Length: 624
Image (cartoon, rainbow, N blue to C red; front, side):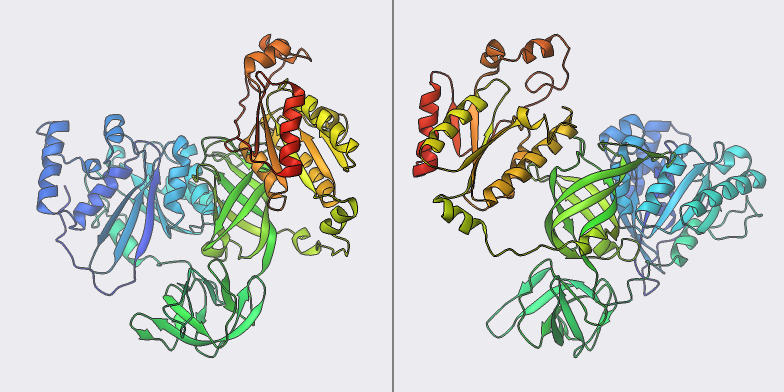
């Protein structure tokens, strides 16, 4: 067993290094990391004693220490002998401090690995000397490259099991360098190691005199700390500091370039200009701030800047756009469906976003491009992204802060994807909103009515079209200008090309909502009858309209009653398996949580429901 290195104290060195360990199952990631911590002298006496005790319990009195027990902390991991979650560890040597993420090897935990890689500057990729470069190795290297890692230490582990053969090591290193080069990773340091016995981990091994390179610890100590930040000044505003009326400062962390008092800057998006007056920190004012420093900037004049804006060099501002091409790694348990609405968080800014199309998905094992209409858990897709507001950004390859984003589910607030912006789509800058002098208010006034959208939702056969048709007859008789958009009728024309998969349902509702929005803009009272089974799509429709314009009408009829009516024979066909993806049978219906009007149809005549709707629409009567 290699001698243990004495504890060291971190001093001024090359700065903090964040790195990840990744590799196939049983390649020895946890053992390597545990040995690294041990050799670096980072185990207190009580933890070392616990390691010796746990090793005896698992392996008897062989005297071999099982270093994986130091990092496989989850009970499920210990029971299965694999790493499931991302385990973060901090340690230091005399030359440097480190934060390491021990990432899982299984394909189903790709999202966990991406989490660890998103902040890492280097990857330690393990390969079993007996197996060589595997499909999993290719997958891990691809994810690392996708997340911006450009430095790799290839640890060819278990060299003791191949008799420390140099030719075996050289062949694996050559294979891996060819693989990494294809992903744009040219900085590869090769190491033959035995994590179990400590060869070339904390110190160089006498068992492999043919290896003239560093040990793993030496390679980590000498690695470049971080990617070179963007050359131009960028600071995403995190917080507007107003301790009193005499001070207004914009706090954030500089993510690129440098800034000093007197520099001309621009607040984006929007392009408002000012000059830096002070660069403030808790320790006093600075003559200059550089990338990585958290500061508060004051300007020579008051500007309407807030959290999410970007302060940038006026001479070289960041590009702005609202439509992008991006790689998306899907992390949600439910599939990503195009045109579903999410929150997108980039830097300190949060906006509404939709994946408008999936250009292709990428097989993470082979990197083959495959056609796709959705993304499932752990799948990577190359997508077009549409935002409701323009943002200041940089390509991810230039700046991780202004080029990396996450998608957040608007119902559960769960993070469901991470993404890397590639470039802005040309149409984002070529298409502009054209002002018209006659607006929605004027059109509504000319008709003597307030434009509205009544959105009828409910199961097939619930009575949506029946109620809406009778309501329109009554409104028309009273002189109101209306239009009824019925889902079935629209599928004969506008939506003729759509099926009934979840993806098609999302697009169906999007198109109907956009048409309804145009009709309301024309000053009409528009009645929409579509099942619209998903809350997310109904929320998307609502957000197209001004406050108070969108009225969600839940026609609440029990499934049993809808099946009994079955006016089109659809339930019978769905139960017989002749129709798939039928709402209420083999496709879900998400009940509205707080509709403006809740029509409980049991025991009510159609005329009574129309009276209830008329009272709300014309008199804004409260509804239960």
